Length: 121
Image (cartoon, rainbow, N blue to C red; front, side, top):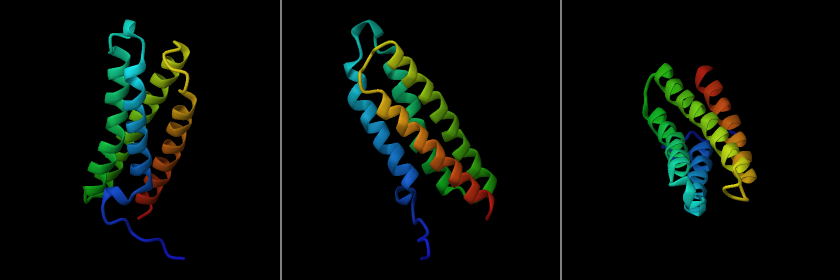
């Protein structure tokens, strides 16, 4: 079976999954404790948003190195987000952090495969 080439970034499963993750994060962060004063919540939202944004930018770039640069920037953001979610979990800001952390692991694996794919072309 031949793989269909993505016509735009919205066709990339890794972008779709990272976009879904951002939406989930925007749903839970308003529930963080008031004592946070939105500092950690805002950092989590900002970091999460970088992931699909950089995937979208990288998709449009023509050169292999430029694409890889933006995909690796997404990888860095996913690592940072994973830590921030672990911190929020450990501070007991929200009970349902584990599924989000698992999503970051899955997205990171997809990004690694995407980078390998682009590197081998």
